[in-house]
Image (cartoon, rainbow, N blue to C red):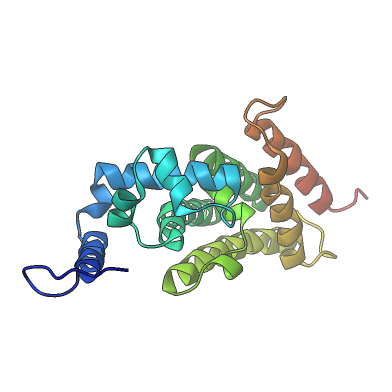
Length: 223
């Protein structure tokens, strides 16, 4: 590779790398229209091809820019994944924690939380990328830890709801609440594998079916 010197010193490659780093760290980038377009394009590519199979070149093609322009805005594919998931994961965690703390019965809180989960998935389809990937394998560093913490916190919020339902007698006491949450969220999280927006049922309809299944499993036996 030929490295040319610039007037200010340093190789052309090092100057380009420095400019990329400065651009990525610029405080105004998050509101930059091009950056938002790139993140949106990355979401489409990751959902269509899967994160592991996608490349930055795929993202550039989706947005309609060349690789040089893309590399001016983003350094790695993982950076795009973090940008894509950070706000949706935080929004989901905040919404579920708020529902879990409402002053209503455990049954009503669980139903409201699971409906909120489906509503958020529909509103923020970037969550399908999170559900389709194992972040422990594809991400590292503090950003990945924050995403995992958000997921853990909404799981704990649902567990608290079920525990309170057991204490109040609304839910059966022979099922481990943590295992119940794993089973319930497993149903909802698996939607990303087979749901189609043009399918026979909407996300909300599927969510209601899952909700009835969850509540039926948790209700104490009659008599």
